[in-house]
Length: 299
Image (tube, rainbow, N blue to C red; front, side, top):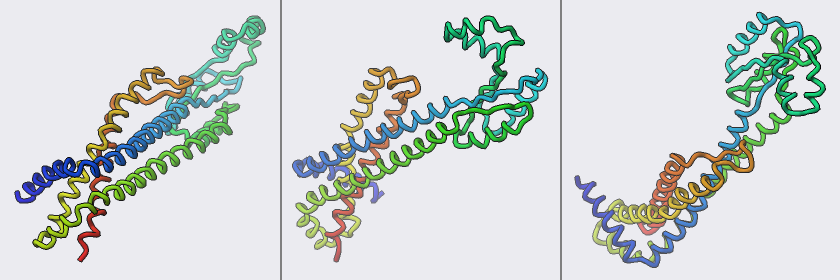
């Protein structure tokens, strides 16, 4: 009960202290707000980039061309074998007649040439259109399918897919590093800003030490004050994330440049990011205050 009373008193005193030292508190809040805006924008951008990459990865299709001598029974057997593989998401059969019809519908030139073909004249091949669960293992899956009987060619744009995988991994790593670096910079800036607030109250800390207050008793109000500063400083970044991202999503109808580059739906994405921003703001405020007041507690 004593701890709860102390915590309640610390929260009350923290709010009083914020308004009592308004000019210095405003400096800390401004620093927290600016840095949290950058962190929030980076988080939104990095998550959307990751989302783009997943959409593009899902769109990669492996085409398996079959031997011209294959029978319907062998097609069914091959389909069963392919679907039994661990990395297969979907496996759809496309006959050579379907391929011909699709090509004819796309071009008048093709229609003029292919329109005279009968089933025996059609040089196209039956095929399977395959999507994999994990694009990182698409090469192993392709090699396994190539080894199956009645499979002539497996094509998935090996070089392009390899480049995409490398690019996606690099983007993900850069995004994570950027967000972590910004959080570290935020903590550093907040620590130095809050030090000004603590420095102006070193006499208050000295008096508390003289009357026998423990380090915990002295630190608690300042840590709670840092948490309050972080909470207040996160308000504007949260509003920017919720309303700014929602407006951006609505303006572009959730799509940038092409259907492959789809933005993350605002609900519940903006609220999850907002919660993270608030938690980061409160934590860095607490860490900043605890670090800044520590030097005045040394014997």
